[in-house]
Length: 465
Image 1 (cartoon, one colour):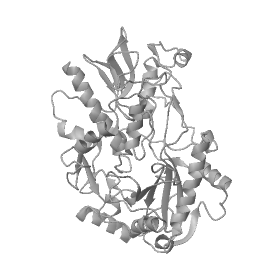
Image 2: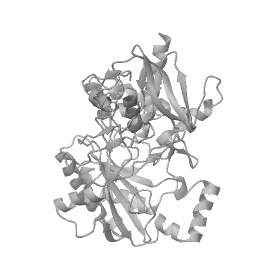
Image 3: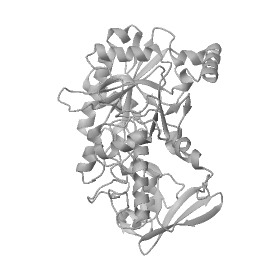
Image 4: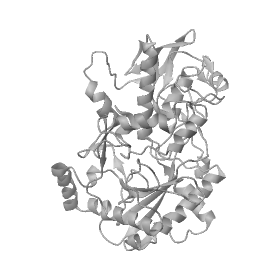
């Protein structure tokens, strides 16, 4: 990626039932009302905050119970973090000492402030989309689930999608649809499959010898993602997960706490606390997100450091940089080219610098400073704006929130309409995070489930008609 000094970075996708909800960081965040009002203002009637809030409420099975903001009868389990690390509480207290508010519910009346996340767990178990939606109906006679299969392309007759071709082992198979086909392969594979099926920029399709079903140049464009830049500190006390994993006895203790009480680090994922803050008083809503972890490593998913360390990760909520996804061959097993173009917009560069400065401001507060020996990253030698931006380019990594590559709207760059129907063809919808016109202000799982719930209503309404 050119914005990251041409580094390659890790972009995992969940290739299991439940998709990326089976491997994500568990955090349940809806975003800000303004996110969805902006979608509606871009020509997507029916997607304003007032339109989508009922879906958010109804999909929840929140342990806090039913209220104006939450539901308790939906399929998606949402729970508070039980046993918290004292470092997470210190981070929240440091935010308040720095002048920011404490927030008891990021999905309540306001997102602003610092607090504990809610997670898609129940009694210490992950509640993926497969657990929430597929498992309860897996025995239905009208449901067939085919695993270890790769979708290859969608076939059309007279402009109507009617068949999906897929590979399973060495065999190529086809399945036909009487009504419509729903594509839900995510922000990377959904545009890839559309392009392989002849829907995309006609110039690109022709280059690979693919027949053009409809010229839709927006397919694969408008790619957006949250770039996280991580500030890591050496800790004064052995309170971190790094320390837990260095000791066989503490490892046994972690296992016992989880086995007996479904508590401890194994029950809560990586990030326990967070904050949604403004980089300037003039910002109408929070424009950066912090995620705090009582552990540290060189990269997300890599081995933990051998010292006591903790991490404050900061990302810009609404980046202006745009990238693209494009096929590299006609073979669906060949991964597409992914070009996020992180930090290409000057505005994004300024916010990255401000976010790092705010991270240091929070770390300097008494509540958190008492636990700090020194700053491991960026390090005391990184001070100027140019140095901080260079650090972001050298060490920034994805928050795993790619969206936007099958944009919803009615402009020339859009791929689906407000009913999620693909422009230029019939019988085909896209229902996943790729339809987001703009990235939501936070983690994307909750919004993905909302899109699926709302999309399901649209599918049923059309079927009834």
